[in-house]
Length: 115
Length: 115
Image 1 (cartoon, chains in turn brown, cyan):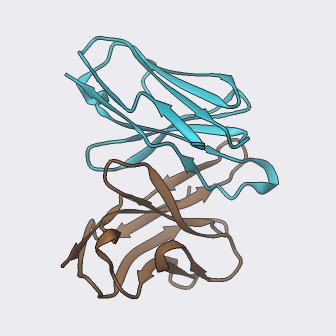
Image 2 (cartoon, rainbow over the protein chains, first blue to last red; image 1 turned 30 degrees about the vertical axis):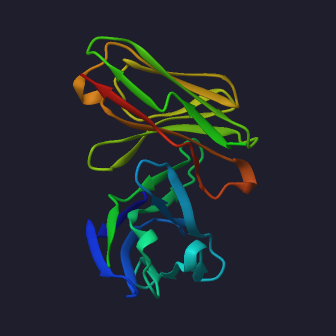
């Protein structure tokens, strides 16, 4: 079964600094991978997704992620953190086995921005 | 127009009561889901329906009964509520077939508090 592991349940960065949130996946087939963001008291919003096209994926709010098959990683980055980026971030992998289609989420990383 | 809408957004009730959460999507998707998010923000799938047919039932107690009257609606009924049922319940939908990458479109969540 597909799974993802997010390294670091809490990450703090200074405003203007690089954001790096780590995600490693395990999949028996070429995966579809996603990053979702959850702002306080809100639902989950798609940031970006990898669906076997370009390995460098750009998303909303200047976030991007790079699919690295050799490292089984899909880390999320942003060059310069903004206060509004404070949120919970979830990496997810898609399981499209017929009759069992679902997204499996990592345990989440809480991003705190230090003024 | 809200794509995936859930009601109620907040629900506070006593142990032993029965309650329902409703979900509707206007995206024309074939598949709908219920996810549970616990106090540690962990997201776990509970059920999925495809065109009104139950596809996934992830070892959820039978006090939880989903119902899909049509492919645009998926409701969740919970009998004999327990303290451990306190969580945020998210409804989500996805297209199916060749369009499907597994991407989910989420509602804003229904926060259930059992006292």
